[in-house]
Length: 236
Image (cartoon, rainbow, N blue to C red; front, side, top):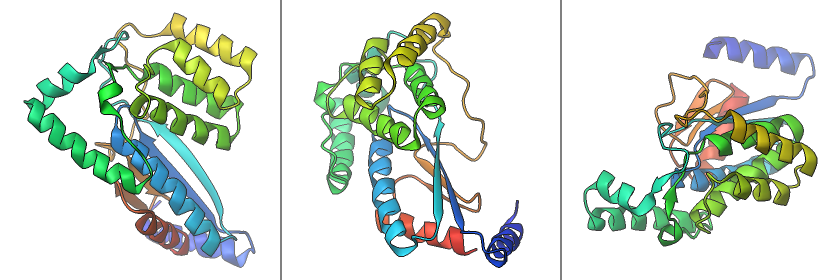
């Protein structure tokens, strides 16, 4: 649907007396620290937007996007991986300082020094899919935030099924079906670590947000900027 089609559809809904709708697709991965900042900024933007447009029905769809699907299921040494990736300990420290400064504005205190393993995120994404099918939207959103926090602020191994089960229970998922899901996830895990990604050629990195298919934001934006994009997406 192009922008003119969206304008026509939005006008048709208004003429019919239907409440306007804001559909948001949020692409993310659990090993991206910017995704935790983006998640917190999205939450703040949604609250801001709801205050200004209480008439709009908002739906957020979380889309898994594995950045490193080839990561072994048992994970890799985190500190060594980033030292090799960025070339030196000094480069790693500079990058982390940049992320930590950005995180403080979103009330996020990154604790990179606590992280021992770079996990494969396939099982964590599978858990989010399970939560979306069995729980509420609020539980799914809370689970994503909780897993990101567990990894970046507490240094937990989110590639460990036992850790994921505990985090799911913390977020109110029903125990019996969650335990069954975790067992199936362990049994059916692809040995390569890859899970089926959500295919979208637009998405080259995360976080990536799409608003009513017509507007997109790639990377981290302030809550004010995100709320402004939401307003544009609903108006046009």
